[in-house]
Image (tube, rainbow, N blue to C red; front, side, top):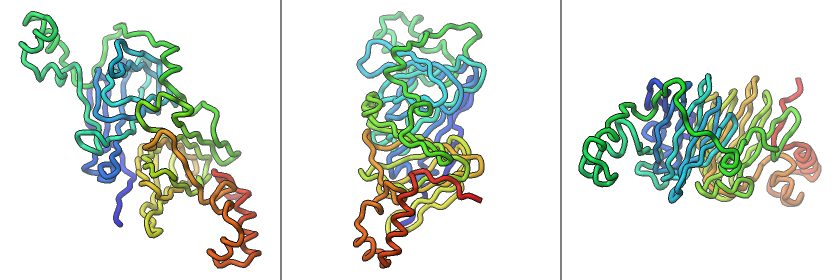
Length: 358
């Protein structure tokens, strides 16, 4: 079974005065189309504004760098929610919701988007629909339709349609005001996955948190969950697989390391070095394991379920320690003593395994 799971880097799709947008194209990365997943990255320069838009895919935004403001109007909502968003924050963005993104700081604001493209026009890719600018929706309608729909005369309609000459990302003038963020809205739609109490925290090994609907109810709006793992230098994440048929799409956000994925018929379908900016996919029930490089490694992944479950093939919580000694002896063709050594050493390991002592 031939699968090209990655890693791949995003390609620049747009560059303007206010910033850039990058995407992982399904034409170059077919597994995204097969898995019905998508990925993109927004880079906003100071005063950069991503114009209001909606998409045909539900996704989760994760702030890799910087700080900014986001406005989002949910389907059927009568007003926007405006929040401040900073490094480590995650924000679900349901398909059909309208959002804008603004960098009100002096450094670059970078947001990673990973999500579900099963309902997209082109599975594997996010398709965006802009409300304003040179490619705004109103540009496609005749002046007559716009004027009658909005109750405007022809001159007023032309101003609405043609005044903004930018495309996708623009740069605002110094001092131009934008809506103030709301703390109450932030508590509802934002979760910082880096500063939250981790599910697992192992000395010299790493820390990780799985963000499910139970922890963050707003995830129910996108039907996805997320996972953040930070591995210490040369530490290892035990081999794991999703037990509920979910697919995972991973992005390396910092550092580097090695990744191996094993699938059907125990075939190793991915064995490679990964670095910041790389993206790779792990199909349902395939087993993935990661080892960080000398500087450690951080990765963020999105999972195609709101209540993810994982099983590990190493460590004290692994399936090996749950199986009876007799079954292990028979299936592995080991002596009772060898089984005892195996399970004893296994039970001393955690999900994150520190670097070997030199």
